[in-house]
Length: 446
Ligand SMILES: C=C(O[C@@H]1C=C(C(=O)O)C=C[C@H]1O)C(=O)O
Image 1 (cartoon, rainbow, N blue to C red):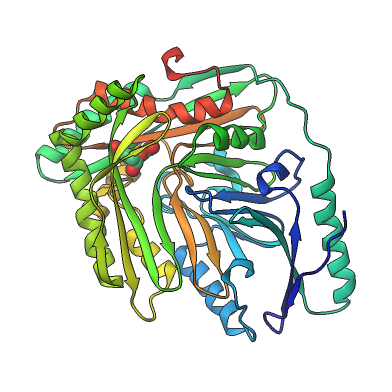
Image 2 (tube, rainbow, N blue to C red):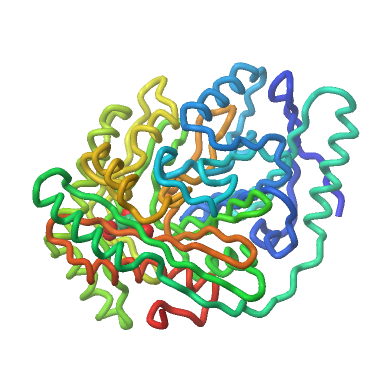
């Protein structure tokens, strides 16, 4: 297959980029072996898919402010703004839940944030697939372009990986008694009115005698979990993989969108049972309170950054294994407000941290049994030329090495919480990843 250039744009005095239409779809490329650092991201409505490989830059352990500065510096160099936002250079990656939180060394280079500026970006919009190549304009540009084009072609033409058998697995809930005690201690702190809400996470360790294949886990998640953001961020040694239902922020030219997602219950086996569970969730005082804490904070923040903020109707967000209370938010961007300004103000919402924010973060950093790495952090893409992009909350996820994986799940604790019920709720939240690792497996077997 030969790539025929559709469009060349000299975006900056330093970079040019070339976009080519390709056949097929980007998800199928995941069936080919991909070496080195790369990231895949698919929006929950599947309207936008990215697969970035061969990074020109890796930005490791950078704060939101530092990534914002990188974007500013890039924008200052822009001499020719592309007419379409779809084929501009983007950063792909994730921020940590809390860079100052408890360490968890298993995350390796990903632990405190990891972004790539891919030279080869496969992307898909409205069912059409493209590849955009980013070339530095110095030296022999033609040779560099040819080199990248042949690398992209090799990936497109590689032989599909075998349908390897599912790995043999064992699992272990880590620090469970300690976590249950922490639920009780958190309830006491809430009763003393030190805290209003805090979200406690725990880990499930997976071990295999063979090797985990993160791409295959991702492919299973894509087919098993419609209506979720599916992602994989791989630095070459560790892969963070997940299928999250929660939008943190989407920025288009004129609007910002976010969502409150909090309050959870299982799915029912029949439509009637499912409906009954959904109604029970909507009518439950504890879950509604957990949700309202999130709505109030998000409203306060979004009012600062948008005009005409609209909060959509309260509804149920249903995923394969779990349903949540949910409100969509949309507002018009105020002039001069950047995506990352809003992201910094929103993260972490009380759906993942707690209320008040700083007290909850201190509580988690001191008391949670393990560090979260990128779990619960923003994961997504950022347009460098035009300030658009989308970040989801990195939930229903896990970090994988060759023979070990760590899954994470959390739940909101308020005064009415009971440790055993919260343990059950986190069990439900492990389920999507367990299914992704091995579709014959459910938490009932833990
Ligand atoms: C913390 C998680 O989920 C978050 C907590 C929820 C809750 O407490 O009900 C619901 C959705 C998410 O905002 C998780 O999945 O790990």
